[in-house]
Image (cartoon, helix red, strand yellow):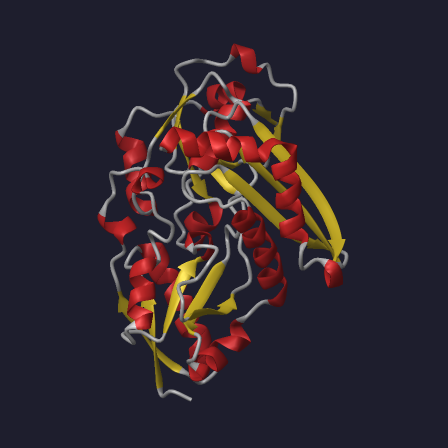
Length: 324
């Protein structure tokens, strides 16, 4: 076993929090570890929308390179940033227990007016809100095409805008711009104690595949690092996130494709929900499947294939043609 494990991490507050969590858990198991800070392309360019940067792994490839060049031993990622196919020579060492998978809206302005506009009252979202009466000036910001597409699907008369940067930067940009709100991952804000009081969970919004999960990667031939991380692996989270990644992989989703997926364990059954939308939110294909845990290995693949057959293939083709 190595005397000291080098943990690669981006230098944002959230990324460092996640890496420090891994460092502390390794320490509890008697393994010393140090943090090594590495800048990603996604951290350097805070202006270009993610869907225009045109690459998968925009937040992970710098850490991949550091692993493959033996500058670090493990890398800690928000799992939703990790491509469906790891770089050759790398392997998944562990997935930590999942935090909240939900998205939330951080809003500005009068709470009563905001809630009325969104159809949210008494802690519940209305299924019959008169969307045709929405304000055309209401604007929500996010860098995620998935979040923006789902928002426009529910609120077609609203506007969306791009919002880039780490959590702290995005919160500040929300205050500095004339937006009504911005969408964040609940787990990101809650992990570093930055969830504002003026926020509500978007229970109707399906999350990005693996949202809320933390993944550790290492070199596939590094047995010491693999063994050190094995006790940190949460079997239930690893199973559910693998199913979600399969769904994403079959649909060949990336930053330009609004794809959502959530697998959950309920009474020894895996319950899966997924969807794909057109970027403008006008088209939406949904799928819901269940399988016993022992037979759930292909659940994500089956769900994706059904989505393709139900019209998802046409949405993907349209997105590709629009980008060519």
